[in-house]
Amino acid sequence: MVYRLGGRVDSDFTSMNKPSPDASNPRHSSTKGIGSQDTETYEPPDHELVRQCQDGNLAAFEELVTRYRGKVYAMILNMVKSEADAWDLSQEAFIKAWKALPRFEARSSFYTWLYRITHNVTYDWLRKQRVRAEGEFDESVQTSVEASARTAPRPQASPDEKLSHMEIRERIEEAIQQLSPEHRAVILLKEVDGHQYNEIAEIVGCSIGTVMSRLFYARKKLQSLLKDLYETNR
Amino acid sequence: MKPTDEQWNRWIDGQLDAQEEAELIAMQANEETAWREDRAFFHRLTLDLRRSFPKEEIPPYPEFFNSQIQKRLRDMVAAPPSIEPGVPWFTWRRWFLPLSAAAAALVLVGVWRSNLVHDESDFERSEIVYTYTPDESVHARIIYDADAALTVVRMTGIEPLPEDLHLTSGLAGVPREEDPVRQVASRPETSRPEQTPVHFTSHRRAY
Image (cartoon, rainbow over the protein chains, first blue to last red):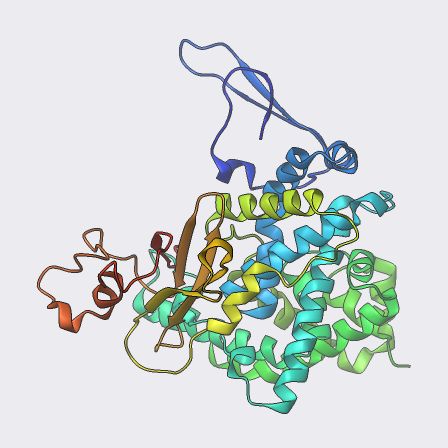
C-alpha cells in the first residue's frame, strides 16, 4: 500500500522494504520520467500508521509489516539460523505486535518496540528449544546454515579470497552459536543492527549495566574463540 | 584500578571522548598496546559480523508473508473475543518435518480423506497431508488456504522444480513405477479421495 498524492503507484515491494535510516519520519519520494509530470508518493510516518492500526486499520498494519519485515526476519534468522523457523517466528512477532498495539503508548519508537517483541518471541522459542535439547539430542538447534547459502562471495573475489571469506564466516557463525541466547542477542543488536546501548537495554528488557556486562562477556568470549582466525588471516 | 565493563565497551566502540580516553590510557599505562590491539581486533570482527549476518533480509515469498498475516488478523477480528486462538495452523508442519537423513532431495506427498462418520447426511472428513524429506537440509511445509481451496507444499533447500514437471505426467523419461510422486498423484479417482489441488513451490536463497 502506498499513499498517493498523485501519479503512479510504486508496486515494487523491494523499494518499500528498505526503510530509511529514520523510518519514523514521513517519507516523500518523487519520480520524474521523460514526458511525465512529477509524481510524489507520501509514506506516512510510523506513528501515523500506528494510530490507524489502533483504530483497527489492517491496511495500515500491512504497511508497517512491509516496512519492517526485512529487519524482523533478518534479526530472527540471525538468532535461530533456520529460514523456516525464522519465517514462522516473524509471523508470530507481527501477530503479537498487532495484539499489543492498543497498549502501545509511543514512549519508544515503534521500531524499538517491535524489536522488543521480536526479541521476546525469539528468546522464548530459543529457550524452549534449549529446554527440549536438554532432554534429547536436537541437532536442528545448533546446525548452522550451509556457508555457501549464507552470502555469496563478491563476484570479483579470487578463489583464495572466496575460501578465506567462507572460512571466516563459518568460524564466526560457529563462535556466535556458542554464545548463550542472551549474549548472542546483545552482540548481534550491537554489531549487526548498530543499536545504541540504551536501545539494546530497551529491546532486551534489562538495564544498561546488564547490557554492558553481557557485551563485555560476549566480546571476550568471541575474542578467545576467534583470536587465531585473525592471526592466521593477517 | 581496573576499568569497568562500560569503559571497556565504550573504548572498543570508540565512544569515549578525548579526556575519558586519556584517563583510561593513564589508568592502564602498561597495557596500552594490548588495549589498542583489542580495539583493532573488534573493528575487524565487526566488519566480518556485518558481512556474515544480514541486517535486513526480505523473507521468502514476501507477498505471501503479508497475506498470511492479514488472513490471521482478519480471522482474529472475526472470531468471538472470548475464544482463545488455538495452535497456529502453520505449526502443523512441525509434525511433518523431515524425518531422517539421506542423500536425495525428495518429498513424498500423500493426501487422502477418510469418512469418520458413515452417515453421508452428516459426515465429517479429515484430510491428512504427509511430507517426507530424506535430506535433512530440505524442508517441506504444508500451507492450506481455505479461501482458495489450495494446498501448497513449500520446499526450502532445493533448486527450483523443473518447469516441465507435472504431477500427473511426471518427468519425461522416468517410468511411472519409479516415480513416487506420480504414483500418489495419479491414483484412480475411485480410490483417491476428493482433494484440493496440491501445488509445489520451491525456494533457494538467492544472493
